[in-house]
Length: 258
Image (cartoon, rainbow, N blue to C red; front, side, top):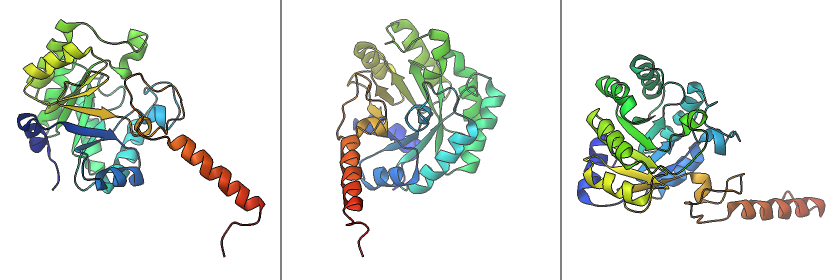
């Protein structure tokens, strides 16, 4: 049965941990959804890093997000599909963000959008929600603000994090991603929030966790995966071995098979 934003919200009350992973194409999303254990699939602007090979998420366009989201959402029958609102639409104010979010839902089968920022995005989140578009917030480390902050660092400002989480919930978001926040602050935010928290680099005490698909599978082109990532496979090596075996078969005239 399809997971909807109201059902996603209920998972916090049930106490069952929420499983979220990213996906950027049809076959990956189909595999994730077919496992039957993934609650939400995030089409992240992290595609700029893991698919496009860029240093930041900033160059990713709205058209590119829609292109990838359409493929992913078409492959998913059960999980909630959430799409990142790319830079600079979160930053341009309620009208621009609402128009961009509306395009995402109109042109894909996605269920919700994700908006980066805390108290300073309250009016934007409220406007998008008022337009009938479900929103998941994103506080703590904000990849879209990397030019402003200068580096990706763990967030330790307790008062700011708690204020941001409260503002995002008050604005009408039905969930919130907490990125690179100390475990004790994330645990406190999770306890006081009435909406589910999804951690990434924020310790084990959030209501759920999200990882990048490529990092989970050891498939990232960049070998320097974040410290909080546990790799559950080594697809890089598996692919290298397969390519080498194929090359050997070709040179021995053993491929293709007749």
